[in-house]
Length: 192
Ligand code: GLN
Image (tube, rainbow, N blue to C red; front, side):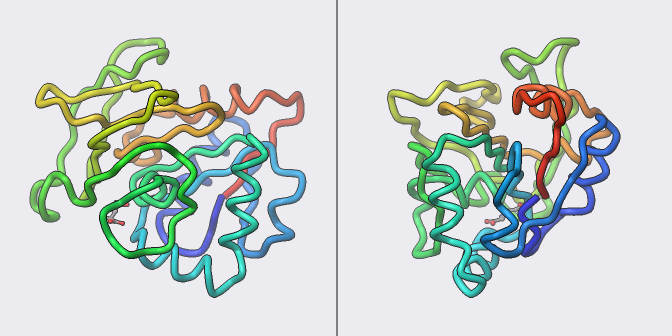
């Protein structure tokens, strides 16, 4: 887990429930040997600022450029995106353009049942908190979930997965289980 700011503990709890061993990343050296990296929800401007202050921005870009597994949730989705429409520090690797706070202010936070492509067992209870939406995707991005109004809320590009909602607090660990499995090592050590 990238552990600079945001809901790190909630992801760690979900990872433990699915049998993974979460580690915290705060320094470049912490990226060594990880099987996957989660970028949590929180506040993407703050996460970017802290990543820059900790000397982590370039190491994170290098980690992603190596094709190693990364999953950005909510603010983490924004942080991974190529363009978020604001002047803020981004990893900038995923070919998506994002609308921050696409659902409006906190009062429009919501829960809804969502079909996510490739996720077995029926719709996922998805929690949206001041969530972003993906406005446009590049040719190598696969859309995994869309709301009835057309907002794209989950997508994949190579080893990069993004969700604009929070699977770590929906009470349904299937996305964590599937992602850990996709990190594909016999000794699974996920990152926080
Ligand atoms: N709105 C926040 C941002 O722009 C993201 C909110 C979240 O991660 N729950 O960074």
